[in-house]
Length: 204
Image (cartoon, rainbow, N blue to C red):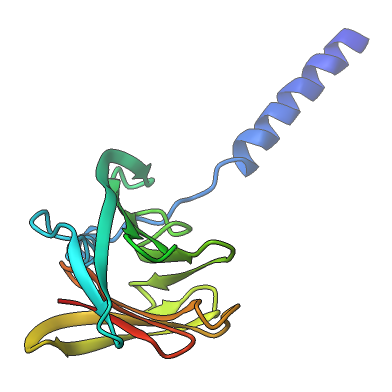
C-alpha cells in the first residue's frame, strides 16, 4: 500500500513539474534582430585601423596602441518555441597609450537573448582607478546611469569628418588625470578623449 502511494506521489510530482516547468518563450522577431545585428556590427573597428598618434593640448604626442583585437560569432545561442534559432557575436578591442598609464577596453555584444542584447561596454583605467559604462543600442540609453552617452552625427578632427560618434561622459571621476569623456567613432574606434583637468587628446 505504501509502495503504491509512493508511486502515485512520484507520478503526480512528475506531472506537476511537466506542467509548470514548461515556460513559453515568445517567438523571436528575426527581422528586428537582423537589423540590430547589422547596426551593432557597424560599430566594430575596421581591420585597416591600427596604432595611431594622439596629441594633447600641450602639443605632446604619443601612440594610441591597439594591444589586442578579437571577434567571434556563435550560430545557435537562443531557440524559441516557434522553431527559430538565432546566434550571437562579440567584438573586443584593447587600447594602451605609449606614455600615459591609460588603458581603454571596448566590448561590443549582439545576442537574441533579451537579458543579453545589443550593447557597447567601455572600460577605462589608469594606474589606480577603473570605471566602466554600457550603451544599449536597443534603448539608446546608458544601462548603468553612471554616464551621459549621446550619438553625434559628426565630429571634425584636424579637418577630417567622423560620422556617428558615441560621446561618453562619466558622471564621476577620481582625479584630475582621470578620463572624463571619450569619443568613439563607428568603424574607427577611439578618436578623442578628455581628462578631468580638461586636457584633450585627439588622433592625428
